[in-house]
Length: 345
Length: 292
Image: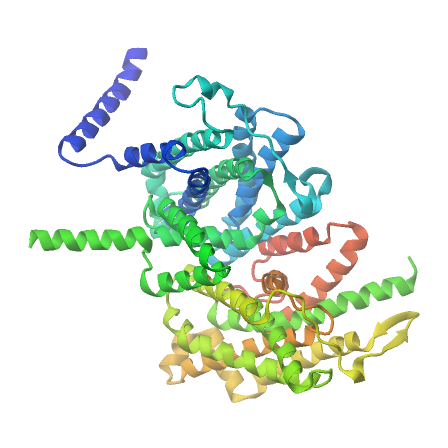
């Protein structure tokens, strides 16, 4: 019985390993692995500030990928995705700071909490079409903002929840080479691993039959309904999964930025994360992480010169909307296709 | 609770309501015709407030010149709206909603920083015109004349807009565009000009309300994103694209906010967003609107 169940899985693993070996031998590079390893060297090769930026990019990447599950995969334009990020951040922050719950419990709890809120709010949202959907997601996110801003006893109100403790990462000292790392760098490595696992899960979901159904719904909801697919149920499932991962990103962000504040949940943050996703390219899995890296890096470069970052961001957005609707990855993809055609011709 | 206290809460709610109506009417107009949410409407409002302050400095630095400043601000922002439509919006018609939404958000970012660049980040204020600086006693409460003026101007603007939409040729065109823009285009009407005109009227209203708010609230960066959310709520409650819906939506919003503070102190913000969510769930097209 056990053998019968595990054989196909083993075979699949073997196939995957062969595919990887073939890619390496044929000159193809497993980019995902290379980027992960490169990101992991930042605490040793880069400065403290580089680690800070890399943390931000990593967390934003997860947040933007979770949004893109809605936008790029399911075709739902949410203008309130920050609500779930905020719920995750507050759940994790309150559990760890107020109740002293360890990170290993608070982290999954924040994802579950955000997914639960996504289930309740999404139940109503998916009943609406297009602009009304966007408006209702915005309304729910502003409800969360109003609660965060006013419920002093639990959320700290406009003072927020400062000084959320880091998780206990002393065990990392036993890993060779990690003994001298600061707590910030250790938390970055933990973040990187957790985000990598989350991204792998989201990638798996998108590639699964379930993900294919979501894509069908994005391309043609009517046809999907004719095929007997329960469109709203699938949209709700996608909404809950996206909310859950946004919650995980929020939990990491609260600890990384040493506090959770009501500002995190204001509606303009939802717009920023949408810009990040579009900038990278909503049509590609790796678009949002590229967008996150580009925006965090640009922000750092530009704020050295001027305080008018919003102006620059607006200008970037204009160029993007009028010139490169496919985003950075879309532009690179087009360039690559053109080069290939030139080489073949 | 004494009746004069309730009356003053009511008047406070009504002032908020008529203000929001001025802003939201322009937002609702654009939504009705173009089916887009213009995030930049709050930015137009903010630019109106700054322009009014600037005009007062030019016209009469020691005070006065308020009405001229209001006209300059409203017309200036109206032109800005028309220009935006001509230069940018035009090429986004027919694109996905997301791109249109993000374009209006790009304007929010750009105008917000441009205002900071030109006028700085300090709070600015404009004093009320001398004729409306006093106050009167009603039902044992003190009501500033300026807020009474605002309460009067709301219905006046609503009536003027109604006349524009229902009794003029341009208004008829606008209403036709609201119903079926392809058909209007096919009939040979100049839809492009109609859109520019509508955008100009919408921005004019935003600029006007921005200028009129200056004697009551100080002009600060960030007023744009705060007001736009409130204007959304009003438009959603009343029904996007419906003039009278927006009017009554503002009245409801103002009273919920004003009396919500008495019922759940500290949670009046929550109650207005909850109201918005409930309306979207139960009747997405609003209390007075029609389903799309």
